[in-house]
Amino acid sequence: MGDRIVIVGGGVTGLTTAYRLLQHGGSSQVSVLEAATTTGGKLRSAEVGGLRLPAGPDSFLARKPWAVELCRELGIGDELIAPRASGAYLWTPSGLMPYPTGTAFGIPGDLGDVFRWPGLSRRGRRRAFGDLLKPKRRGGGDESLGALLRRRLGDEATERAIAPLLAGLYAGDADQLSVRATFPELAAWEAGQGSLLRGAQAASRNGRRGVGGPMFLRPPGGVERLTNLLADRLGEHVRTGVRATAVEGSEAGWRVRTDTGVVEAGAVVLTVDAGAIAGLLPRSSSAVTELAGIPSVSTAAVLLVYPEGTGPGLPDGSGFVVPRGAAPMTACTWLSSKWPDPAYGSRAVVRCFVGASGEEDVLDADDQELIDACARHLTALLPLPDVPAAAAVVRWPSAMPQYLVGHLERVERIRASLPPGIFVTGQSLDGVGIADCVRAAGETAETVAAYVDKEVHT
Image (cartoon, rainbow, N blue to C red):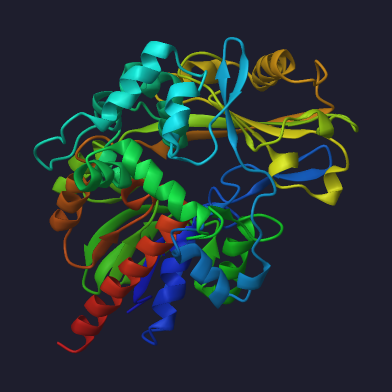
């Protein structure tokens, strides 16, 4: 018998799953197969103008504790740093508009801001305030994020202010995304307090009391340090440059075919994206059809480094978001303000996000066209030169899963239809953020360990 447990995918989910399985004290026969020559998946950096800049996530959500706890286990918990700048802006035709302080999910925690915030028209503000008077929704089924926001706060507040912030995190369409799978807190606010504004008020009060600490954290050097440490701990259990091509039944339980040979396994954990999982499973599996129902969209990060002396011209804050279709980018992070680094000097360093559900056609442009378009729009908003000193584009084809209405039920059906010994987890199923991936990996490892122990003793 070959490797007892084979994990396909060497991103944060796959590496964490392997790490947790080895911690269970079970079989040392755990292998991670990663098609690329390096591990880490989307947790990586790109070199631009002599700087290492985040090409994927730049931090993890601290209030979901699983990534922080893993960092502590790996010995870097005390090194985690919070952003130096906070507060976001909204792109408007008249310039950047700061979101009110004390917002939660883009919703003001101060009712006075609902009346005063100039990002909405008077009519839009009055409609948003109507949230306090509207009855709760009846029934507890899933609905779209947009349906919840429009019902409670109105179309204007949803489209101009809140959807760019929330749906933008998923590169998605608020009217298609599942609220239960993306922001279940909002549904809980309506169910428990009868109002999103009252829910934001409570969250704001907790923030003023210091409950929860910083919202985001990262290790020095970037989030890829987490996956690098995991890969180091796993050592020879990780095999890079090995692409899985199929998963088949065998006498040992399962056979993973790869471009370098065959690996026998008692259990297989698939942590790659939904489309890749579907391509590995037997076509007769009903899970394949369900996996095909999880779409994904392509995005890109446009990294721009401006000359010395430009950094101080950026406004206080971490960046801005853009209403759907208003500009070639969906959001922009001021890296040099959010994560200052001595290596940046006085340079403005920014990252623009391009591409989203319904806006993928912008990615048909070549790299230079994307750089020029982002730079042109930034110059119109900020005191930046027309042309950056250095720039790069990192493309992420079909990299952002879309959690459509009913996503959680779909995931349940996928897992229920899998044959014994096959397990699935990862960004396409269990959460797009690093913290959720770490949580899901731990839960999967427990399930796999229990299965293997049962098989060994029966």
